[in-house]
Image (cartoon, rainbow, N blue to C red; front, side, top):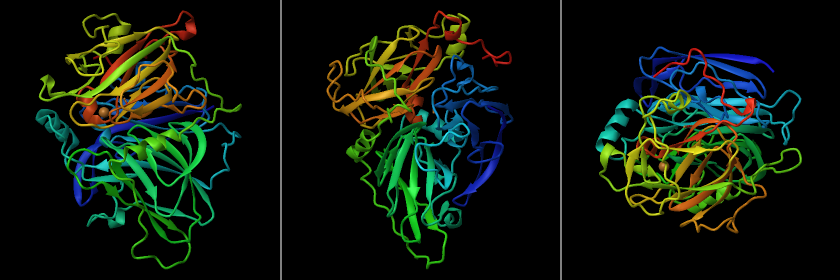
Length: 511
Ligand code: C2O
Ligand code: CU
């Protein structure tokens, strides 16, 4: 195992897309980027230096930070130990976790298997990270402030990007369009991250099927599909076989279930074979499920299954000590705080001192221990608060998320820090409050870090609370989390010395 050291200098730098030049927050002047590479078991240290005159935190999305919540996202990250864990292969990502700064501060975090550890599929010819993101002609901080002040849908971004590049549908974006060059007969491993702020995406390549082999940094049973659905926060790994007549093909992404009034829902990029052929003036375009096709989105998720074999076993809890319900609501506006989202009818308000320090140092008055259990499925009264739910070390949890939108129906990609969880069931309508409903999958459920709860439907997850600390759980749509769709778990220490939270680093910035 090696130590890999990265220096991230947060700075403002200027970039041009769609003929618009703007100054924005970046790491080392790169947009997006830089990409972090490591091998399983390596220690990754990232020194973050803030030269931007704006607060920043970086979150290592999907990295468990075992017993070490200190650099999961607090201001000014100085160290980032990546614990080896049980996985062999990770496509994860990192992103800023302070207001909407992740719009331009993100990239992939790729953990390769240990040396001489093969993949459970033939070795690909090459590996290509694909990051879905977006470009905003306006200043994102201003957009956010306007959005929160107006209680409305945000000013929209101007184009979806792939690896920081716009599609070719815009007058000044043609030469910028991302092109993936492939050789006929070869297979490519694509590591895709959805870093988009507010949209679940469909992705599809014209005339090509792809083979999904992993999601959220865990191998899945392989399956072939002509499209994928990917939520903000999720990663999907798939094999692309260059097996079509050499030519140019479009590979596009399009928003699923987008709200708001914008028309830039499809973005183009080109898959091109290397070889001599006549370049078509209009390459074939993929066709997409309808933008509101919930069953296309849900059907894709149904196909995600863990390998669950001898070499890659699963440890889904067959029993649980506690079941918790979480209602996810977009509430009737207007309401105080301009923040009409809630979990269990509580709109999350961020405190001034971070909850982790308050918990560790016994500072009172920062949060309340009264996060409601077992809420009614329909909104009664909503309140603002910083309420936490305290879990015992090693408690075996089942969480049921219930979409209860009272205004606009939309899916909610829920993300839990500090853990991976098994997605054991989901469905449309209201959860029946039956123990282990027949549609539960306890045989080969996928292990995820983010899962989209379908519109007006429910999703159940299970995990064991074996990572002591303070962990945020929230919708990965920026507009919903700024509206208060989040909550916090405190997981108590265990008894033994190796089951307790580690102390903070000496240079931990105080609030
Ligand atoms: Cu990817 Cu709380 O974040
Ligand atoms: Cu949401």
